[in-house]
Length: 196
Image 1: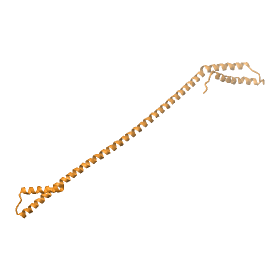
Image 2 (image 1 turned 45 degrees about the horizontal axis):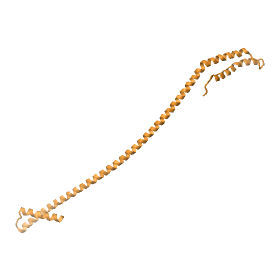
Image 3 (image 1 turned 180 degrees about the vertical axis):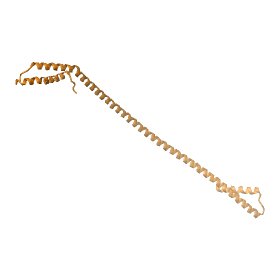
């Protein structure tokens, strides 16, 4: 944008003076002489032009030029502020992208740790369950063996009691308690030897 300088103002003043001289020239055209020139309107026009030029250059043009400079400075400061805001937005975007990448990496690492922890916990639980199951089987096997021995012992005791009664009837005499106990222990010993 061009600024108005005193040289340009003088060019404008010449144009204004020419317009002011136009009536004087038009009056001289009535005489049909193209070279006819009247001095009084010419000098009056020059004086009016000088006064107008002085007033414009002293009071009006400085205010206009000051307003234009202020506007130019305001536009420049707005451009600087916009550039600064653009730079801050670009920096903020970079920071956001960096934070987002860090968050994604941290989330990925957390997922990997969680998967590893789950796999380890599952393996521990599986091992513990296998151990407990083996212990339960062993206890059940021992309980079955104890119950089996107890059942066999009761069976032999009952069988020996029946056999003693039969023997007593056969022998017609009764076996005393010591004979009965000895007979049961001998039968159990034979049974255990047979199971081994």
